[in-house]
Amino acid sequence: MMKSEAKGLNRLFHASKYSWQGLMAGLKSEAALRQEIAALALLLPVIFWLDISAAERSMLLLSTLLVLIVELLNTAVETVVDRIGDDYHELSGKAKDLASAAVLITLFGAGAIWLMILW
Image 1 (cartoon, rainbow, N blue to C red):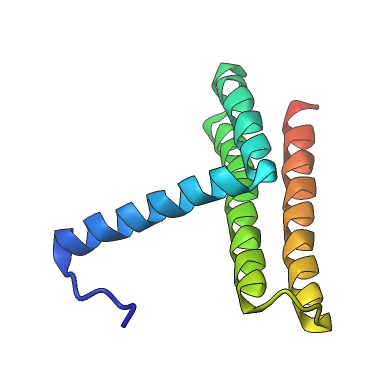
Image 2 (cartoon, rainbow, N blue to C red):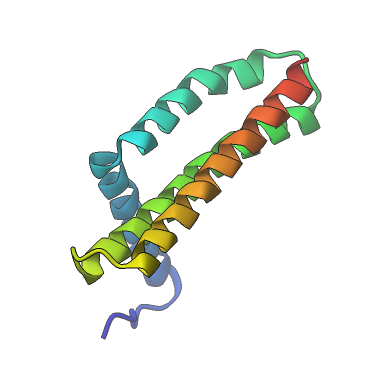
């Protein structure tokens, strides 16, 4: 049984531990995630250095974090599809392509937000 029986703070501790393990697994296996985190590390000081409103600062931060979130979900989809088997299947390819497209659209959206605020 995969569902945890932990309750309260113990459940929160275990959930945080599993989330951290997931992030570390993603960093270990996904070059794109490492590149996006490096970009965030470079952009984070810029976000707080710019003379912009709190709302604009929030939009820049959230759009950048959204790229990481969608990349993690893309990695999860790819991992599940790969777990099913190595044989090519049209639906497996479609699932991976759709998840990858979600990352691309998120990157375009984040780029558009940065351009609109900085231009």
